[in-house]
Image 1 (cartoon, rainbow, N blue to C red):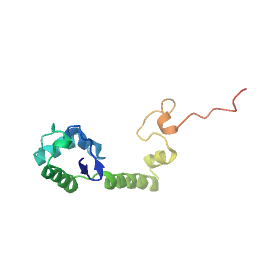
Image 2: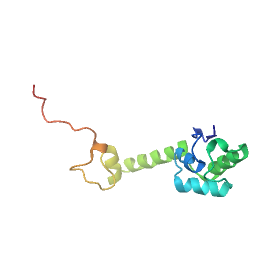
Image 3: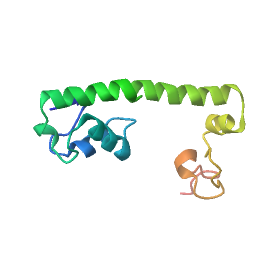
Image 4: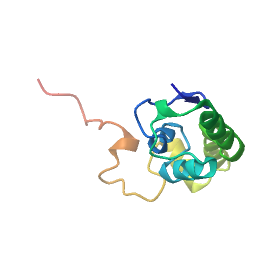
Amino acid sequence: MARIVGVDLPKNKPIGIALTYIFGIGRSSAQKICEVTGVDPMIRTHQLTDDQIRAIRTEIQQNYKVEGALKTEINMNIKRLIDINCYRGIRHKMGLPVRGQRTRTNARTRKGRRRGIGGRKK
């Protein structure tokens, strides 16, 4: 089992897909990593040699911000928006959609369950 940047990659998936299990790496980044390291993106993860795993690991560590470091940066950006009290920061603080979506209907993911008016009738 290949373990890269603290993530266990699935054994039976092609490495081009398996790399997307790492937070911060999508399909295009995974394809670029395979291209740079010279690994065939269609080879299964369990068929990789130790040298190929080592090459992928060093490429990711040197050129990509992933997992904990990326999550920390995202959270710091949101905290900065909240601290400067900009519009987006206020929306984050209130738990409302941030990017201009409507809230009269269809904002249930951000707003949570509906709160009914009054009590329930028996």
